Image (tube, rainbow, N blue to C red):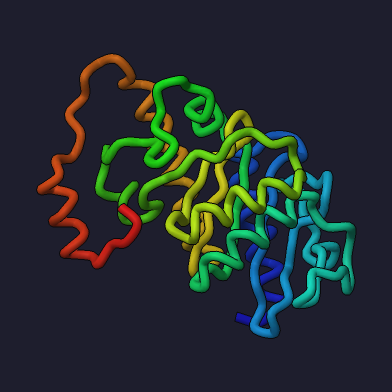
Length: 214
């Protein structure tokens, strides 16, 4: 896909996420890695619902701003996922309500935040890790992400929000949506003793679809 079409796609997906209430105000950010190693990134303090393709931040392979507006402060977060997941070509970070809520619950397992509730959660997002709280933009979050050694495509930042890496922008957005819906299901069913997928059912999905990180 050409750079101009990627710019349009970032704005289109951003508006879709915003209009459905998945990232309010000026929260959230999207990046896409280009063939030359550079990035397209949403600007800092910009609403995902009103992005301008021409104003997107264009960074070179060393993370320097080449053109466009000042990039999101979450560059270290995005960079850590690209550095540890060689297949990643896009990263989406939101402040979606249900995922943020789950990130604050005391009972969740940092190594596997959500149980195997649906096949599409495993197929799209895979197992999700929890990263401890850091202030937005803190470079220390990069070390926390790198500490996961590329084992997770989806991560919850405690008291902050989800971040997902994908092999394409479309894949990252769809995985993010599946993660948020699964977080919503978890909250709806919490303390109700729901029936999750069994280990045998999970193993069948892994075999049928070649899943990793589940």
